[in-house]
Image 1 (cartoon, rainbow, N blue to C red):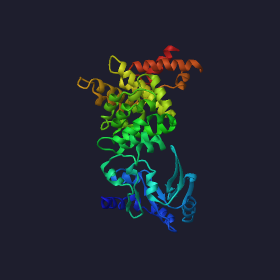
Image 2 (image 1 turned 180 degrees about the horizontal axis):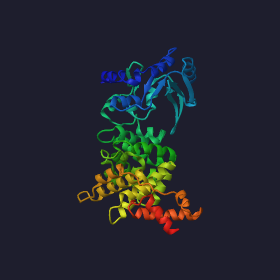
Image 3 (image 1 turned 45 degrees about the horizontal axis):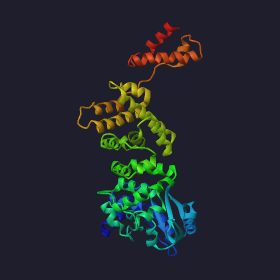
Length: 415
């Protein structure tokens, strides 16, 4: 198994690059060594892209700074007190962190010092599949036998799961997120039990940290499975402050092959939490969503409610004009999921046709501006806006068929 891993890692483009080799060359001096650790190895072995690369080293932070600078690389002490230096090679940032180990434990706290022992550093990490190290030549160092778990896609805590969680309660959400992204088979029973026992610890986390982790979880391929288990364990309600429509979310993620938007947290949260408008505000506040994320949720939820409450199928062109393409698509997908969850065997609208229309139809553009009506002799002022609104309503009721000439003729009549 290690030979297979070596072959995969040694051939990885990111490990062969001159950029990272320059970092290795800068650090690997005076008896010190450096190895890539964690996600880059896991993703490479499992066939996923590698968005960022973390490096662990026996070198002290000040030595990393000095050696990187001497090698012509840019070094930034982003987390130097915790042993982390950002080394930039040819524009790409590498997080380089000195090995650490616990030397004394005080209940849930530990005094951490820099060290040179790779196994002690591994014991401080979260999951076995993340405690993998590789040197510059692609040779794997696996102090905790995490390689087997990685290839089997088993997400297991290192050592005592309860202790790992108490070190950082965010690891509860990371357990579900890593499973949703990489896991196979049943979730680890020991890990689940620990998450259930320690769940109240989530209440001590900042909203920003919870929101960041939940966004990443909801974008993962198996988010529906993970979120259902979280809901069963009472974790969803603690994290978001509300209930979840899990069946609707299952139906939404069943559409992954049809619409990429199903992986977007904003749409997922509409489906999961959007019982009423106040729920959208609450979950946006709870997870500290950005203004753009909140606006997208509000727009999608409004369209969803129009589909849900309409006696007849809403006019798609009108939805595009009023809410924009993103909002119209989000609302349709949210309604599609709710419909599938409720009427699994019933007759259904032609959702695919409607989705294609929303994706391809031109969004109507109101052909008149204030300057147009003023040019006809209408006096400037608030009345211009009022007139445009009334003409826009006439234009919408015509099915967006009236052109500029038709509308301007009405201005003449009204004036």
